[in-house]
Amino acid sequence: MAINSEKPASVGPRPAFLVNQMQDSELKIRLAQCIGDETYRSDFAIGHRGAAMQFPEHTREAYQAAIDTGAGVVECDVTFTSDKALVCRHSQCDLATTTNILAIPELANKCSVPFSPADTANGVQATAKCCTSDITLADFKRLKGKMDGANSQATTVEAYMQGTPDWRTNLYSGSGTLMTHAESIIMFKAAGIKMTPELKSAEVVMPFDGFSQQDYAQKMLDEYTEASVAATEVLPQSFNLEDVKYWIANAPEFAAQAVYLDDRYDLADFNPQDSSTWSPSMSELSNAGVKIIAPPLWVLVTLDENKKLVPSEYAKAAKAAQLEIIAWTLERSGLLTQGGGWYYQSVTEAINDEGDALELLHVLTTDVGVKAVFSDWPATVAFYANCMAKS
Image (tube, rainbow, N blue to C red):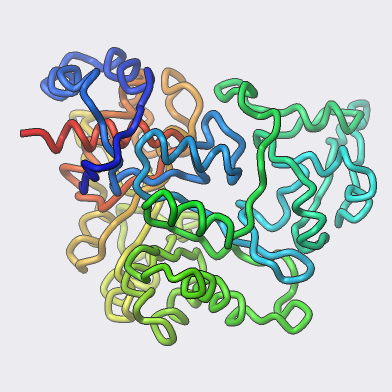
């Protein structure tokens, strides 16, 4: 857990809040002793879409919050506009829920699926689909980011845009500044942090106006080279294994840090406790040149007979194959008093309070042996990493 002692961070009150929520234990005592200590940035803490718990994701403000609160690595999810400019958005077609595009008529008219109001009497939900590939870069730069969410029961655009989950906040969502991929590189380089761009799946048919998947994968890396960013400072990611293989074959200096985001959890028969349900196998991935694998939190842990959190068979197999592991995404659930939802599904029975986020983080660190952890509020992970680094 690398700590940058030249880059102080301000973690705020959340780590102390989580520590105070923990059940009594040696870990709680140790973490409590670190409350109020000076904290520094850590590469163990990855800002997921910036600091998306409180700031509109993939905005300058979210990125700055992640940097200020201790993230040593920050993520730009990379997609493209109609004129093939690379921009930071979690999904090519999420503009209706993450920006104000529907409030700008001339841009809303370009959306793939215009806003359609709910018809509650007939059980029809409100819908809209607006993609970066629907608009130009100039159009994109007119947008403002908002907290991700939509009201599916809305009958007006204004109501549809109000859908922030109740465990997040709109306090900082007044004017989120959208970023191009190149702008994020400049910002991150100036801050002295590492970068983890994710090549997003295209929701248009590829090639797109002559722009192939390989062109897309290469262009993302080229923008780092053009900005004179060393490949060692970049952890390119993709859920598409073919993208990772492309980097291995064509950009080995970047591929050494490339991250295969494992989405096999979506397969109907996937079981993190049964290796026969994983294809390719961990050893096959390693032999193909994959160095880092990144599954969701719940895939890496399970419960033993005493309802204690322990590494899953998946986690053990990944380590046996000498794959490094990055986990996602801490603090992307609602209140853990309600079990934690999707991200905690393999250990729901043991999740009772907010402090269990730190209990899980500790198991991921000490028992699973993860390389880093994505978080929607990276201050928590930075605080933990700094505390554990103390003798």
